[in-house]
Length: 250
Image 1: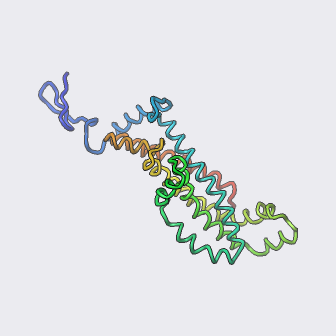
Image 2 (image 1 turned 90 degrees about the vertical axis):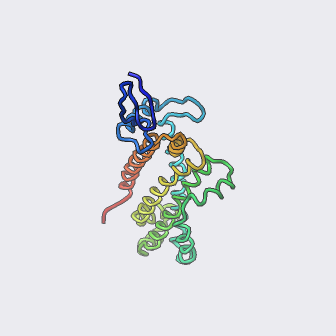
Image 3 (image 1 turned 60 degrees about the horizontal axis):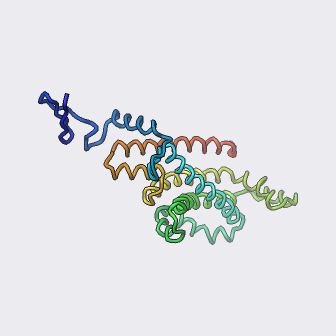
């Protein structure tokens, strides 16, 4: 039976018409998205060209970028936050600046970062870094500044080294506040990595979303959105499991 496509409608050889979801200019239905998902997953590990990689590779690129930026920012933020929190003078002097920098969108830093490093891969990582930095610094500084002075006095009486005092007294006492800051940073970084890839043209889930939009494949855009959601849920589940190891109930 011959078919003739006309806009969103398929004309059959019997003179009738029926709806063709694959040619629709509207929002595709669940069956079309399901078909797109099946097609993409069937070639998830294939590489057909420089910019044509399967979804498994794209997810790996995004997660690698996210992990590099988030982990490095978390380490720097905790160290800086501890130093600020231990000094009342530094805390009063720097806290207003941190509160100003914290709500700035990480994407606002991207032109300056791209101009500075002149490399889109490192720029994407640094965007995630900036998204993760300020909430963790603010919460760590607050948590350390509110530690009971008795704990620090006992550590001083025991003549503990600075690093041992940090690992056995300061970080455990401030852990709830630090974990709260890491949760905020985690969400901010996850939100930042996808648009960074879209704007910089770096291979990843964000890149897939932009390419599918340029191809006017709305089902592909919806598939990419679903992938972002699934990856976010998996990463969030892993982070929550890790957070429970360092948290305690009072």
